[in-house]
Image (cartoon, rainbow over the protein chains, first blue to last red):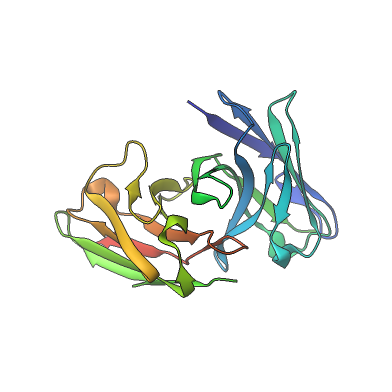
Length: 123
Length: 108
């Protein structure tokens, strides 16, 4: 059974870079959409983007080029970096595994989630 | 981006009752791209339904999904105590992927 465990700094200062790691236990990287989603009381659940190993990344345009996702298959980990953070980036961040069928991502869903990481942006 | 509007915001029901949750999209979507999640306080969302009507592994058959076009529904046929939670719909028929704001099902 696949599990995701995530970690990272819980406090960031404004203008700094937020970094989170998500480890994948018990499964392969291939064929999935490794994603980051954040949740705030104000905006709810917000998809930040995804990385499909060997294919590439897709990001939410709302993050305006501040986000980078990467993967290290030798460690079974994937990563989130968010630059130039502000208080508006304070959120619970989740990593998740996206699964779909075919080129047109039919039946896309997040079937495995990390436990969530609260990141507070404050000076 | 596709906006998903969930209604009602809060549903107050008793155990054993039927819950009907609505998710309306700002544009027509193929039902293949609709999923539903349950979230309890302090926990990550849990996948319930994908492809609008397919139950995820291990999800009880009291949960069902339906709909097409721009309107989708999650139905809980008989509420169990553990079903009181917040429910979200999600779409990936158009990028960026988006979620609804949720419907809270609370004990009446």
